[in-house]
Length: 163
Image (cartoon, rainbow, N blue to C red; front, side, top):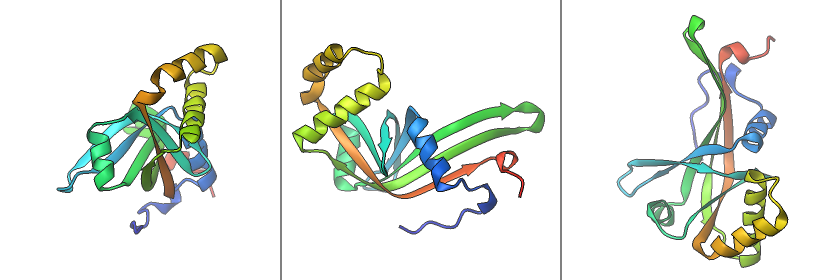
C-alpha cells in the first residue's frame, strides 16, 4: 500500500500514540469507494485490539455491497479536537488506519466479538442483560474486521514536544 510521505513529518504521531487513540476512541469514520471511484464514508462505533478493528452492522446494505466489491478501506478516528480561536487553529490529534475488511463468519468468533463490543459500550451492564441482548440481535448482526496494514497519525504542530 503506497502512500506519500507525510508532508509535515515532525507532526507525525508515534505508533504507540496512534494505538492509544484507537483504543480509547468510541467512534470513527469508515471510508470506502464504489465501482466508479466515488468515496462513501460512514461513522461507526468500533473495537480496536492488536492491529484489528471490528465493527457491527446489519447483514445487508450499501456498505456491505461496496465491501464485497472492494474490501480496501480506511478508518479515521479523531483523538483530540480543541478549537483555539485566538490562534485561528485547532489542537488536534487524529489517526488513519488502512487495510482490508472481511466479514467474520465463524459463529463463536462472532459472538465473542459481539460480547467485547457490548462490554466496551455498556461496561456496567449485568452479564444477564448483555447476553439477552446478544441472543435477541446476533442473527441480525454482521461483524466486520479491518486488518490494519498501515497506521498513521498526525497532531497540530503546537502539540509536538520540543526537540
